[in-house]
Image 1 (cartoon, helix red, strand yellow):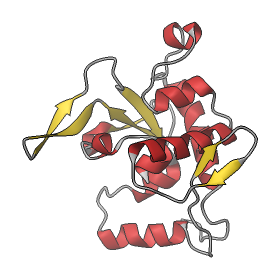
Image 2 (image 1 turned 90 degrees about the vertical axis):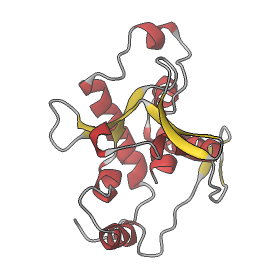
Image 3 (image 1 turned 45 degrees about the vertical axis):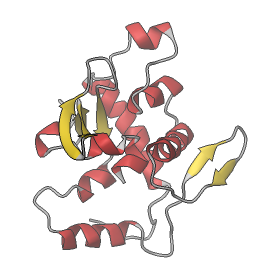
Image 4 (image 1 turned 30 degrees about the horizontal axis):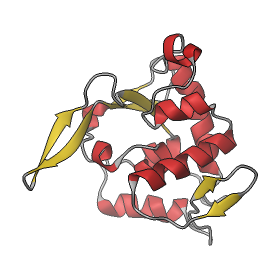
Length: 180
């Protein structure tokens, strides 16, 4: 789900640790994840390495539905129960790719590109700007203002992006689930 709904690559998700999850300063119950390392494979052995500065290093707001599922002090049964609530009621997880004026249900294929495309399409529908999406997916911004003047790690900016990410996720979770 983190790959699919937060645009992170699998190698970044696998390198995450609980210390990488931080509160967004000044916003109660809002969190972000620092993405600064990745899991790489060399000679059939996996190691965690730091991402070179400026290459996909970023702070990504964690949507509240995802934060509830994080396995911090939870058992697999707890996570399974939360997942069941999230996608109960006959609602399925659909994956979209923007194609201009129409959307196509692609099904889900486990790949970084597919997850990033799906997250991007959901975020675009919820109102995130293209350069915000590029930042969240680890790509450099397209315009000078975004490159030089917008601080995506700023607490206010992260909280604004988080609100849009929460809106995007609310489109795919079950409307009639029990309140948590």
